[in-house]
Image (cartoon, rainbow, N blue to C red; front, side, top):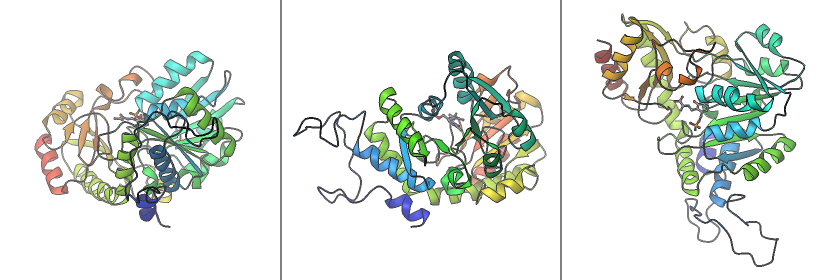
Amino acid sequence: MNFETLAVHAGQPPDPTTGAVMTPIYQTSTYAQTRMGEAAYDYARTVNPTRNALQDCIAALEGGAHGLAFSSGMAATDTVLRLLKPGDHLLASNDVYGGTFRIFTKVYADYGITFSFVEMSDLDAVRNGIQPNTRMIWVETPTNPLLKIADIAAISSLKGAARLVVDNTFATPYLQKPLALGADIVVHSTTKYLNGHSDVVGGAIIVNNEADFTRLKFLQNAVGAVPAPLDCFLVLRGLKTLPVRMERHCSNGLTIAQFLEGHAAVERVIYPGLCSHPDHAVAAKQMCAFGGMISFIVKGGPDAARRVAEATRIFALAESLGGVESLIEVPAAMTHMSVANSPLAVDPALIRLSVGIENVNDLIDDLRQALA
Ligand code: P1T
């Protein structure tokens, strides 16, 4: 089946007991057992039918064998990091979500795991960054918030004994399928495009390797950061429209990026769909369109950035991304405060847009008045 059909149906046959077309919200913590220890459903941290449907749907969309759902993107990230052991090294993009940098350097660094950060668009830097004990390579592409692009297939060919993990939150499987390009594990903040309506915090892991799946599934239950049944239902509902939402996010994104590139108050626009993006060719090779995230630097420094971000009327000044509504933020002061004073620190004049699915002319009018 094709992506659009999988988005609506994968993992969600009509409910066997009633024929309900929508997957029921199995709001229960436990299940009555007829014979001790033989039930397929025993306890809801371990297994829940609504969560199973979501896991199967996300796995199908990523083209993976197995999906696991979590209570946040950070919980999914945390669970993947638990595959590492003291003494292991993780090589990461030199631009990642602030919370990802924080869990690396402020949580797992205390458990004997070492981290280093390289320019993932530079394959020599990746090659030189891999150490004998590198067991994981962590890639965001596009990155948050600088929208850098890494060539997943090329990095996969360099990875050696390390697992290649791709955080596919910004691209979504509609635009890019990391497992098919050679990644071992995909992680998501389902809070973003997959749910798409800014009403759930959630995460997911997709994996093909059976041994990794067995361990990650064990950890999902043993550590316990599982999503609530209602949240699973809401993400499932959001997934049904992922393809149509992404089409609009991408077309609005490209139009707005072009508008900003021609605006006198804007110093630089970063959008993988623009020819001016240094890795536009790699993005065009591995993505089928370029998404709804745009970063730009305004003339006039941090004060000007703050004024613009506080002056929009349709774009809400808010953290997060990927919802139907447009958002604006200044990463250095908001989503990426945890990278301040590190080599990953973000230019305080950089504004990040999550372009929603509203009418693009209304969005451009809003940005025009804010930039004025
Ligand atoms: O917020 P949570 O669902 O826990 O997901 C964390 C996360 C993981 N990976 C990426 C690429 C992300 O962007 C995020 C969360 N990001 C934001 C909240 C933000 O505004 O950038």
